[in-house]
Image 1 (cartoon, rainbow, N blue to C red):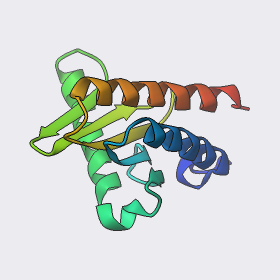
Image 2: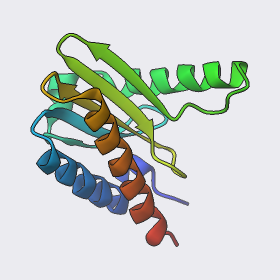
Image 3: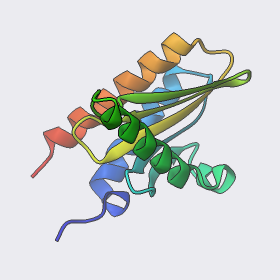
Length: 136
């Protein structure tokens, strides 16, 4: 029997590590979380943000499912990332390659979309590599 990702100490530790590094690289990062495909938060920065963010994990899970459905319907494959751009910043959501995890990030408007997306993609790739390196 395997441990659910949102309760797995290994997944939580790797997630916390990469999100802390991400936070150190961008002062514009307001919130970042690693989430399960089925809507559970694994870890977030700032820690405890889930109390302020509310239903983010379940909404992000629904957005991911919808974007995947659109990709399948258009014969494009699974979505790689989702961007929501507003006048006050960006939300970027990416799949963690090879995992049933999603990373959701919120940047304020002091960051460029290109840098925010690049940093998010690098962080997702790093988390994937960490998860793969210690897989049983």
